[in-house]
Length: 195
Image (tube, rainbow, N blue to C red; front, side, top):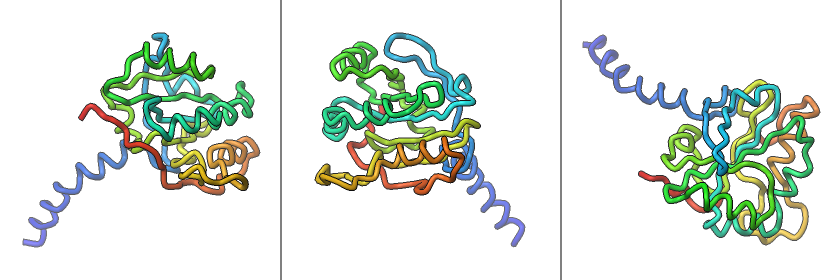
């Protein structure tokens, strides 16, 4: 009877274990992906091995994203990195998004990094992206080293002493140090997945 119970329990648990292994987790290899950007150029995570990769889940219709882009949070953070060592990829998993909308928003806000198109939400779900923005930092070996919010100012009320978790994580990795805050609670709008 005990062996029957164990077999049933294992058969129930296996899908959960398999799902967990396929989602992004700090300290584990980042899920591979290939997506096209707003201009139709293909980007594979494997192409950037040897560089630190920042993934930013985004949706220009989200007030939290709008606040950060108006304050230039993302643009300034990206602009502070050595582009030969750090790659920034925005990912839009919004079901209703189109490449044209991403291109128009990119032009309006004046940033240079690509906006990857994920209207099926497949990659967003594989990473467990919950909000816009939701940030991930992947090291030069392809291991997730940070997952969470861009900073510790969810309400946008702080006037000083804001901790930018992504900048802190990337700076630590570039210095060969451990990331001091490996996870934080992401905040923002829910990702508008297709289903």
